[in-house]
Length: 161
Image (tube, rainbow, N blue to C red):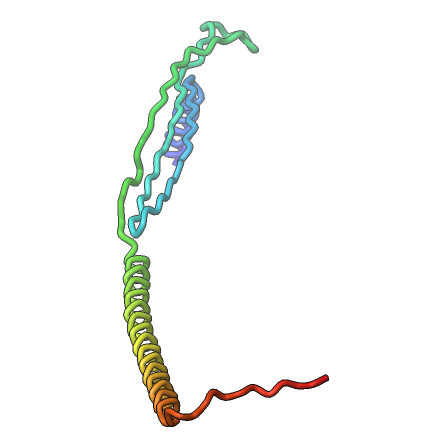
């Protein structure tokens, strides 16, 4: 039992000290931009990840002094990763556009039919008015021709003041 405990202690000490000796620095900043663009019934989705990565090492003098001065040696890397780049068609919007076009077309046909009916009604009214005028003109002509030739002119009565 002593041997196992001692072995675990030695391995634990080795693992913890080996991790303590790591002198790397890593700084990574990533920004994700999502752009959704709608063009008619097409939906374009694009996600781009901008990555700024700074890697380096901490350099110290190899002495046993505490609070030593250190120097960082680092490199910067900038990059872009395209996460999503897709184009999809919005079926719901397409259906709405088709329904709106059909509604407008039906409305136009209905409007044309109403305009034709209105024009026909006006034409009938105008024909009836023309017939009525012709009848009135014919009656007036007969009335005027009915007077005999020897009849004198009609005299107007004047008012005396």
